[in-house]
Image 1: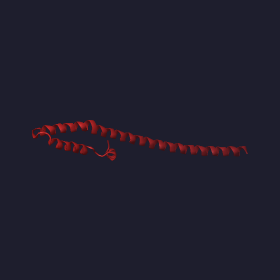
Image 2 (image 1 turned 120 degrees about the horizontal axis):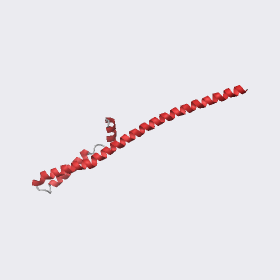
Image 3 (image 1 turned 90 degrees about the vertical axis):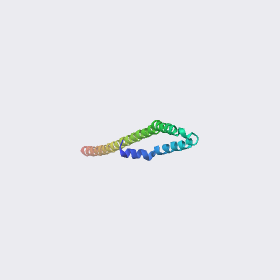
Image 4 (image 1 turned 180 degrees about the vertical axis):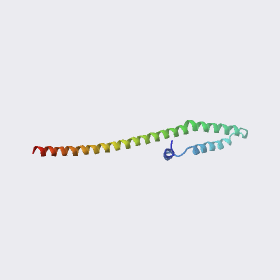
Length: 113
C-alpha cells in the first residue's frame, strides 16, 4: 500500500498500538501490586504474550480491513471518475449528433423548397 493510502487510513483511525500498549502496561503495574514479587517476571511475560496476541487478532486485523476498505473506496472513486468522463464524452457526442440532425433537416427543407 502506498504512503498516501496509509495516511488516508490513519486519517480515519490513528494508530492504536500505543493506546493498547498503555492499557496493558497500566494493568501490568496494577497486577504487580497483588502478585508476589517473585512472579513479576512471569507476569510481565504473560502480559507481553497476551498483548502480542491481542494485536494480531484485533488491532492488526482491523487495520488490514481498514486498509482494504480505503483501497476499495479509492478504486470505486477511480471508476466513478472514469464513468463521469465517459458520460461527458457521450453527452458531447449526443450534442454533436443533434446538431448534425438539425443541419440535415435544414438541408432537406432547402432541397424541397
